[in-house]
Image 1 (tube, rainbow, N blue to C red):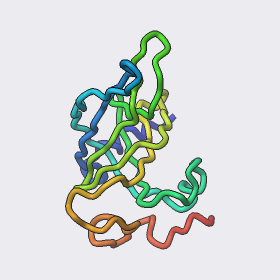
Image 2: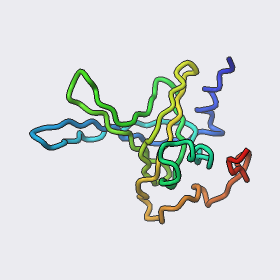
Image 3: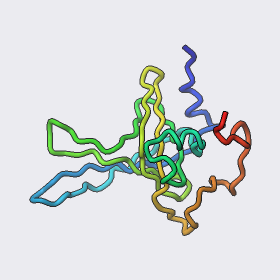
Image 4: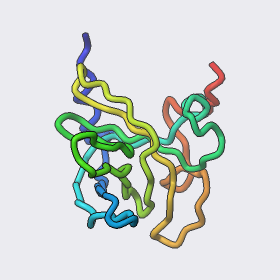
Length: 151
């Protein structure tokens, strides 16, 4: 098998981003959320293609969906309950290019040493309008240019 995990952290494709990880639990009928643990990740970040968005359970109801790649031992998480305790893992939030994204789905490729997560735009901390336009001035180049996902 070809090891593509090196591409995830290749400086030609990768960028730094912050992951905010929280847990929570029910206390006296109220859900209390912990302070976020801030993790610094470095990996490839790309807008999700039309086909990928259609294959997500959210379909076309979400806007600004991005793909975030990580290499082991870093992982991204969606909300899940731990059976051995009352603690609940809350979906990670990712800060990238002044925007906050919430992780919707994680596809682990542990045998390859990496994972891919889809995250939806939650808020824009730069005061920009939340649009579907890719970051970097809206320019699309390379192999994704003109890719409608219809192939």
